[in-house]
Length: 195
Image 1: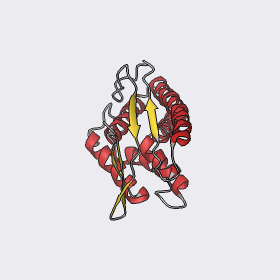
Image 2 (image 1 turned 90 degrees about the horizontal axis):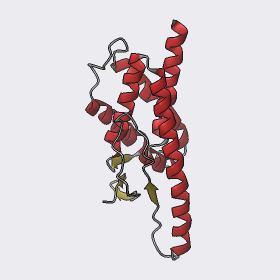
Image 3 (image 1 turned 45 degrees about the horizontal axis):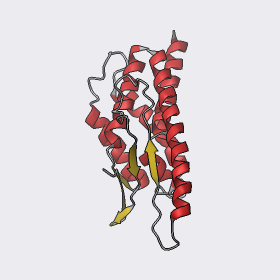
Image 4 (image 1 turned 90 degrees about the vertical axis):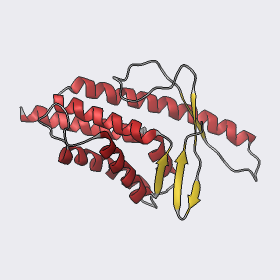
């Protein structure tokens, strides 16, 4: 029985890391070195820190986490992004990622390994689609940019119609475009979604 619990915990860790790796705000921070020269190592550490946060604050015996509310998860992630990457996330993705993580933890608490695997798989599939679209958009942007213009990266996230167990809001039938915007005010970097 202990082996199954350890496997479930490892699977929860994999799902957490998949969600964080697919989070555009974190990836922008890592790719641009907002966390300094060790940004990639910080991102890897972040997965373990989030996993431990849930185990310290959530009750793995209950079928829900009575002690851990969604806004607490958001606050924790926001604080990590601020402290480790000097980034304030204002693109609306913080509540979505927090909800994903909380739902994953609920699946872990119920021992629903199949749901955890499915969530991790769906997140990874979406990340691959977004990455492919970002590369195409970046190539098109590079061809159109002048030497004196400010570089912008647009990432188009498409809805593949897959059910995500109510984890995060999906864009409608049309594509949703997210714009990376770097604004430095008193040493802070802000990432916002274009509406």
